[in-house]
Length: 254
Image (cartoon, rainbow, N blue to C red; front, side, top):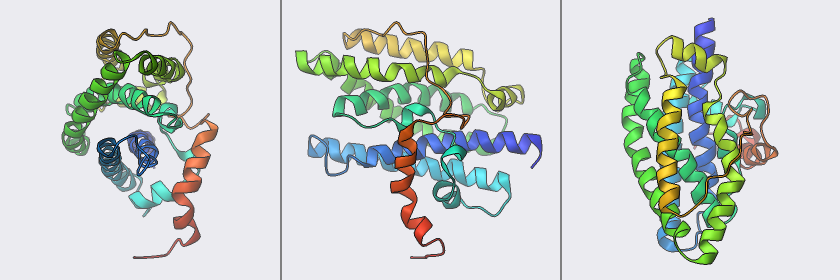
């Protein structure tokens, strides 16, 4: 691949891997959520994200040109080949932690997909236009639950504050630029991250104010996931669950 193709491939894998890993995490709630309504809602969100992953990884496979399908990229890459944010691979914890993780991701996801609808790459615009509709619904839902639980009982607020303090250090990775993103910005594929950062913090500050939650004063940020240099120990366990059947029977067909 050329330098452009290589960077473009990794960029597409980043979006596909975020959706794939977070979607898998949410699928772990199937049959275990605190209510039937939430069980169905989390499963549907997981399906939306899996569908998005299929689109991004499908485009990535076309760009790579090595006869690997979207399924191959999902099921036959190792940990260090994944480019997802560290946040997406963090454990579900309790329901409040899952919803906080979802909200922190959704608040990034929507403005980023919205920005990608203005990309110079037609294929990216088509995917972004399709998936941003679902992402807006995800954000509306996770925002409402964060506010409801944060401004709810003493116990629910305590849990949501604890979840925020646990997960907020992973937010910084959203806006830590690497060589791939810098190249994509230069080529007009992606908007400048500074613009996305502004809209992100406007969103979460408003939500946490309504939820009576205090944004942690943390300057340090966990990073390394989207470059593949430093994933958490959790990703290996996720891939072990997700990939074992495909790896055990690599040529199997339904």
